[in-house]
Image 1 (cartoon, rainbow, N blue to C red):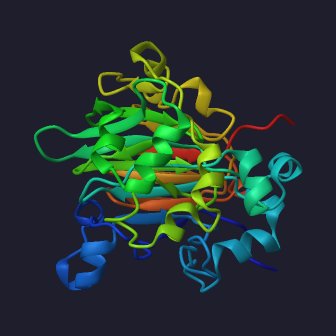
Image 2: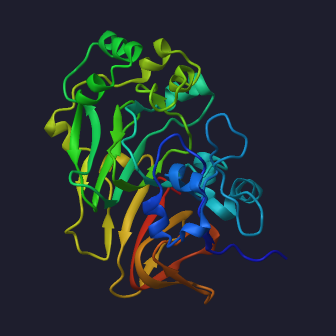
Length: 348
């Protein structure tokens, strides 16, 4: 008989990216310089946690490998009900419906956007587009900033001209600049043009794809086709939201939680709920956690995660864990801060 499914502590999983970063991830995980190569330090800005998603066009790069040597993707495929729960499987099949990343922007990311479900289904034969959300867990520099949504409505032809000319200043200046600090969260709907500024470290939740349509490709990707993922920009730009995001509308994407001091804090705006859920957990007494496929990121402190079977796991700063649904109800205790990431709720 196989062992019952239980929480699993995961190592770092940092596929090579086109931009710099990763020092904040290494610091969180307490990695020494001897544990990473120069390439990983320079181009390891993303840690794909509990990933069943590959980089665009790749076979296995980006996938999480479990301590027993299996890809997490294969383990879930072999026992989707155990990993995900019956209600989830009825709604999403064997997909986890979630990708979680640690993302440390060592330089400003390019202006880009992502397709919605309908566009992804039509052009990429995918059930999922790529709505995402950022939970800011650290910042460096004098003015940490993210960029989201055009400040004024734009004619699509104007944007197409910027892309053809690779007019990066016009693209960036057209976006809302949003100062951020740890505890801030930003919901990023599919289609919304956006970028993350240098020195911003986030836990990112997203739909489980790697569909990034990059307007500002020249100084980052070096290849126009990588910007439009082979679609051509005439097609790709049809997925772009060129509407105006004024201050009031933009506020509907942002939540400021740094001063909220309860044991459980819902981190994301209501618009995120059809796509994923995220809570900050700071138990003052033992905190019961419902059964669910869950990714846990321990952002500070030390605590214990206990199962109903009586198993106990130490959790500490920098740990990342994947929890199968079949692990059952858990109890979290200790002087610890944990970000709990889950797929969208489904009705039984």
